[in-house]
Image (cartoon, rainbow, N blue to C red):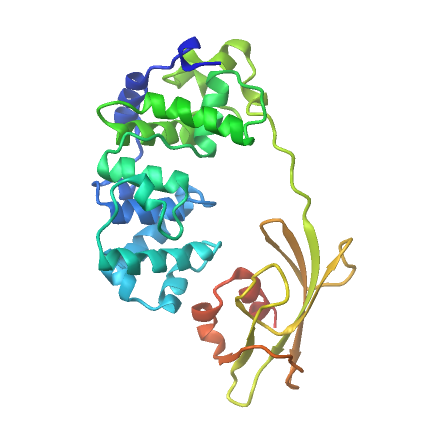
Length: 328
């Protein structure tokens, strides 16, 4: 299938966007710094949840130089609750690089920086610098598979490339920034995963799924990856100064290389009968037994750290860890 088979109207979409767009704080201007911060935060997180985090983050780190000069612990503290903390580490690394040079203006150059994948690089270069490159995320995939009533497995590399080529073709407009944001806005507010609001969609007349009444079954569902089930016994040891012992995690796949409580983590086949709480990280289902101890755990060769409970989020801002402290 080619774009010419049923080409949607880019101008109709951007006109709709100008009248319907949400007043989001990162849309105030074309400064690449807030656009970049918002795009990283919006990965794996809803727009509604991001707004307060974004406002607080920008208040603490108002420009790339402030972020570059900050400690990683301070960045973690502002990121606490957003999850996927590799995003925060990459923000910090990239800020230190950009502070020494300039903000790259093309998606090809942005891709060379930590934390910039194809989507984020294209989003920043088009919104901040007007580069005529299209963005493809889950919202955009949903819009285009419905427009073309596309029943193929959209997650395959071949199909992803086809969708990217369609979006790039439509993005050759006077204002690629508005076009890309309009696409994402359409997917987020109208062409939603369930109960899409087709009657107010600016692309309704071009939509193959609307005509075929297949909106609810497209995109086709991607097979889910099987979850790993883990049982983690976390030993929370306090020394005489009321400091908690943490170790660098080199043993298990969840929270790898992060500061965690010592203990044993084993992969199991079924949900254990006894545990204190359950936590999920990507495709890991973790059942946790918390053990408060006054006897220092026996440790192998690993880095250790003692920290006051109230400072835990500076070194280990993960919900999995916070829940253990709350439990005891």
